[in-house]
Amino acid sequence: MNTDKKTFQLPTEIDLLFDNKKLNVLKYLLIIYHLKENFRKRRLSLEELLYYYSIIYFKNHEISAPLIYKYLRDKKRINEIMISLENLEFIQVHGDIHTPINKLRISITKKGIEIINSLESESVGLYSENIFIIVKNYPYGSMEEEFKQLLYEGEFEN
Image (cartoon, rainbow, N blue to C red; front, side, top):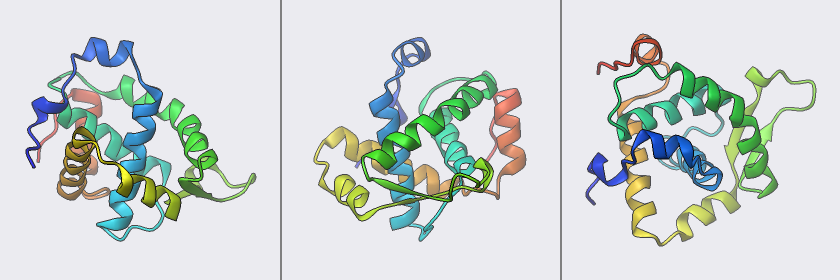
């Protein structure tokens, strides 16, 4: 499959103007799916999800501005998206009402895996492969300094 990033690119203004909640839900679910199915990561933190979401955004858009504002906006919205995914029974949130947000862990359910596997759209397949490649090439935790540089300076060195 061709994973040319131009296939997925929208002008930044349109992307921000029409922030599509359903598309964001799908993106997060695809990240969780690939981490479980291809990288054997059973549970992940919200911070890890935000890391991958930010890297995917950066790699699929031609921008050179710092991403800190988008990152902070996504951080503010991630709880709502995780609630949507849990209500759909696509993910499970591990923790309780007393668990601090930074200690919560997320895992994909069988229903979530079945939904991803049942998607037959070619564009979703291409985007899913794009996410897989980015997750594979930019493992969480090993690129902390580069990620900070991306957030505050708009540059990412690999």
